[in-house]
Amino acid sequence: MAGANEEVIFMIKAIIFDMDGVISLTETLQSTAESRVLAKIGINIDPETIVKNYSGYKAEEALKAVLRSYHMKADIQKLLKERWDIVYNELLPQGFSIVRGVKELIEALKSDNYVLAIASAAPLKFIKIVISKLRLAEKFSAITSGDDVKIGKPDPAIFILTAQKLNTKPQDCLVIEDAPAGVLAAKRAKMKCIAITTTHTPEELKGADKIIDSFEELDIGGIQNL
Image (cartoon, rainbow, N blue to C red; front, side, top):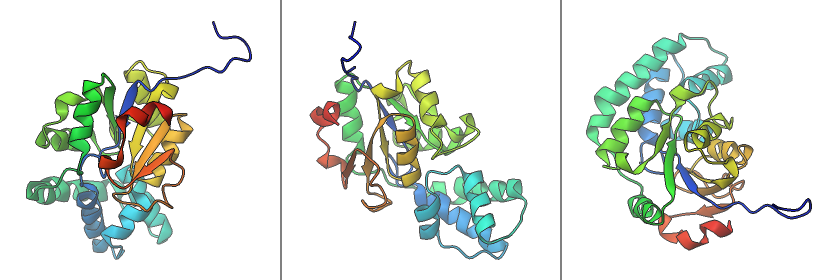
């Protein structure tokens, strides 16, 4: 038993992946659809700006934030339906890419007996389609989606819930993120965080414990030393 002044050492046991921008290059599918539905009500905001300002947010929260910034009101549920109809019926069938090096990382982590999970603001339906197409579904012990939490990132609830699903302490989890909101959520959950610069700059991700430009830079042996 540790003494009163003895430091408690935690070991990383679980790796929690965001999906869009970390596993799959699917941020633009959602932001393109969002840009299109907003244009119909007179809000012209390009997909790149949506990614920059709202990636990591639940779709509903992102739409509400955009409407607030433009001082406009609209039927959120109608916008959401139109948004996802475009994603599922038009954009997803066109295909998407996997983030370079992530499949190799996932396989290496599994070989080292880490428990893996996904915590993404996207709906469960979208997550399952993406990881199924990438043939990664069997790699993850748990999936937490935006459907599972009332408030999305940067609130830590999605990561705390994922740790509970894995029966793992938050301090024993490492999050891999690509968005400032996700990095902040991970740190609020008392988890270590690695950020990859697929969608944001190092300056925007500076709250992470480690920032990488590619998974090829990541030394798996160094995960415990974060």
